[in-house]
Structure formats: structure tokens, C-alpha cells
Length: 343
Image (cartoon, one colour):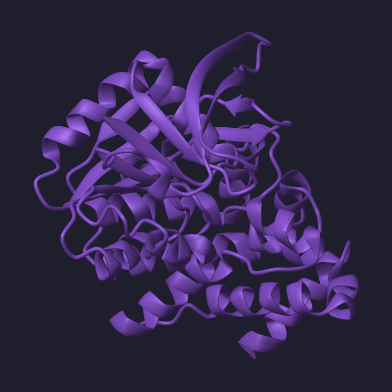
């Protein structure tokens, strides 16, 4: 039986490599293929320079598989997920695994695939794709898995074996919401602010005004989690319980601890929202990151002013080149914009 991976970017390719390295048959959807299905090698280069290769099947369309996959792993960005789910209509009963950043992926799958089991995943390994067939692992991290719907506990346990065999640590959770929100906390760090002012995370956390924005957005998200009855959990390589603890410390102390955390958490990889804004076109994930915090806060009757404002500003700089240029390299302008909103 085959694991079908929809999304051939860095994350999808890396997870496909990991499953294939652990002995599973893997097919990856690559829309740019000109012909029919082909076998291809994927190489993962570790931070120390060691390279390991695994062989996978590449297909242009999910329907090209000769039989139903045992699992469909959706590895596209959140803004592409709805279309990706629709593209897999040929296999309506195959269980699904979601590994998107942010909150809301599982609900999209549940809405379109009412007859299938669903597993939530949270990947904390930092990876980048370097040309065809090569992925670089920038940070070790690991993978969290949690059952969402259906009889999938056995499948969750089964998936843990090939991932672990490939060198990707796996941790199982019972509460998918606590797991996904814990990963969201990590995704918020130096993401929206870096996108708006076009500075790297180290400079974000070294600037007092920007750190204050960062600190407040995390505290808002943790407050929302509390109202939802969710506790931060220890994802492999990213213990959100520590983030919760650190944000409760005095500002200067928490700034120093978080500054060091930021330096190691991304493995040198640019924050996702900064990458998208730098590209200068297309959608972003901010609606499922800071936007998700703001929407959930409204549902539980509390304020998330910082996250709501950051969502709006990322959207503005992505859509408006003049607005992007105004903020680029000017932290004080972002601090002023956030202060004006608060007033």
C-alpha cells in the first residue's frame, strides 16, 4: 500500500523521503511533471553534511495511482489546502494526515472528506528544498501526531515506525487541538513582525519595541488557549510549555531567553511570512496564524488586538508595494502603527 503525498515542496519531499527511508511505498504529487509516473531519488542533506537517499514514485495527479493509497498526507500551504483536498476526490475513503502550520487544516479536511479518518500532524524540523531531488535539514526537530476522527489510532502508531527509523523523532498526542495550538505558538515567533519590517528574527528580538509586540502576541495566544481549555504541550524539539513559562517572566529576562530560543529554533531558515512578503505576490498563511488567534479570541470573548493588527499589516504589505517599502527596515514605524491601533 502507498502513502500519497500531496505537496512536493520542502516539507512534502522531506516527509516522503522519511517514509520511504523507513520502508514505506511513497508517491509524491508533482504538478510540473510532463509525462506519466516516474521513479525518482530524494536526498536529504543533514546539517553536518551527511546525505541519505530514498526512492519514491512521482505522479502528476493523485488519480494516476493504480489503487487507493493507505494514507493521503497533505503537505501544501494552508491557502492551497482546499484545492488539494478536492484533487484527491478519486480516493474518498483514504485517511488523511495534515501537517500545515496554523489552525484550521483538519476542519477543511473534515468538511470535504466526511467518510475518512483524519490525523493531525505538527512538524518541528526545519527543512529547505535545494533544487530537484535535494532537501536540507537545517534543524533536527521531530513530528507530533494526534488522531482527530475515525479509527486511526493503529495507523498513528504504524506511521511512527518508518518516521522513527528514518531518524525523525515522533511523539503521539491525544489532543490534536493542544498539539496544533502549541505548534502555532512556535510559528508566531518573529514571523509577522519579520514580514512587515523585513528584518531577521535576531534583530526582531534585539529591538525593545518589536520584542514588546512579540511578547504581547504570544501572551494573547496563550490566553486564548486557556479559554479554550488547552494546555501547551512538549512537541519533539519544541516545548511550548517553556514558551508559556517564559512569557510570564519579567520583560527583560524573557527577552533574553526568547532571543536565544529564536536563534536556534529556525535553524537559520527565514520565517515563512517574511518569505512570502519578500516574494511580493500571492497569498500568505497569516490568516491561519495570527488571524486564527484573533478569531478564536473573539469566539471566547477576549481581545487579541496585537494579533488582529499584525494580521492586517501583513496583508497590507503583501498587497501594497508602497506600504511594504514604508515599513522595510524601520522597526519604529511598526511600533508606532501598533501603538496607534491600541489607542
